[in-house]
Amino acid sequence: MGTDQRGQRNLWARWPLREPGPGFLTGAADDDPSNIATYSQVGAQLSYRLVWTLWFFYPLVAAVQDTCARLAQATGEGLAANLRRHYGVWVASALVFSLLVANVINIAADLLAISGAAHLLLGGRRIAYAAGFALLTVVLEAWVPYRRYARVLEVLSLSLLAYVATAFAVDVDWRATWRHMVPQWPSGHAAVMALVAIAGTTISPYLFFWQAGQEAERARARTSLSGGAAALTERRRISTDTYLGMAFSQVIGFFIMVTAAATLGAHGLRHVDTAEQAARALEPLAGRFTFVVFAVGMIGTGLLSIPALAGASGYAVADICGWRYGLGVPVAGAPRFYLVIALSVLCGLMLNHVPIDAMRALYLSAVLNGLVAVPLLGLTAHLAGRAAVSGAFTSTPVQRALVWLTTALMACAALLLLGDSVGL
Image 1: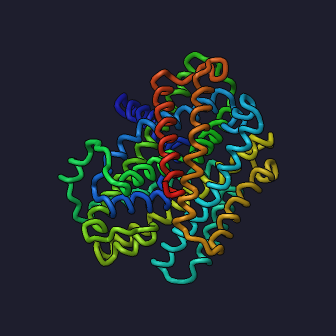
Image 2: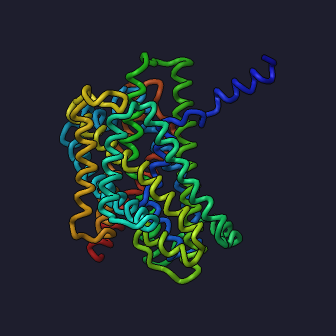
Image 3: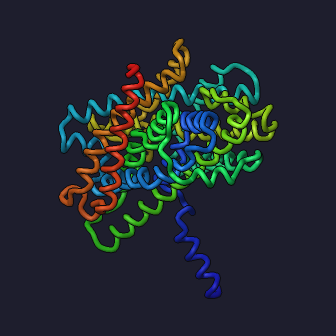
């Protein structure tokens, strides 16, 4: 083999997306149907005015996820176990309980969205699709070997590229788009609440637990890293994987928002409450191709995000209770962990039978996520900055500053959401 061929092979071996890790899959799961609905609604109501938020929040969410992953690698434990160990079982349990409620609501909303998309494409009964997708999620997550299951998630993450295709299939005003890439404080109540909604959907607590749980599994599967070159390699892997994953998530969100602005917003359709409504409205405005691609992308990302939501619940509860857990562990080896996953999906499915307003439920979920995120971010930043806890994986001063800034912003967002919910 020639030198050039060996060099190309070595380059491919170092290419970070050759085998996407927890960070990339977490970033892809961030663009779930609830996020699609939020980005579509923002684009429909405010056109291109808030496209700048996608790059503004990128370093914040990337720093947060990187910090959670580092802490899990350093300790070999997920977030909930670290919180219990250092701040007590009551603090950890209160945060995990709020997380579980928010996750079940999100799972219900995602099942509603992807079953609605399947109904739009194929006809039939929505509840049958919802039940089928729920069963598929549990079976894949519990009974397919994790290495093979991770490949399934990687393939599903490619469905997000559908939203890039839709943006180039419609008439986007790119000049207006680039003009609004410069941050401008939004004026008016609707714009401020849209900004808060973007923050809440981008920085979601379940993502912290999902990535940290996977990193804790990896940490327990290898020998301890006390420092040196091995620890440096792991830190680089975590950062590369995480920052690429979050960049992917934000780029997809950007294309969803500009697609909605160029179609729904440009034709005066300001009220889009769900991702299904956005897909339905696209067909007469942008044609059958755009509608189909948008709907198929929604199903793919829903099947990617629901396992992340349920898995985050499983990791959190198992950490609190001290159970054995891990997607790499067979069902017989961690039955209670997989039971939590199955119950999370089942409860989400059952919520689809309850006569509640879907958008109100998502609003409640956003409030809960905002309230949980603030103490969770603060405590995680505190732990990750302690060398006695994180060792060679201690977060950098820049990372800590970004996480504390994110904590402050999420606190403001939570207060705004609470004020809005009580009519202040």
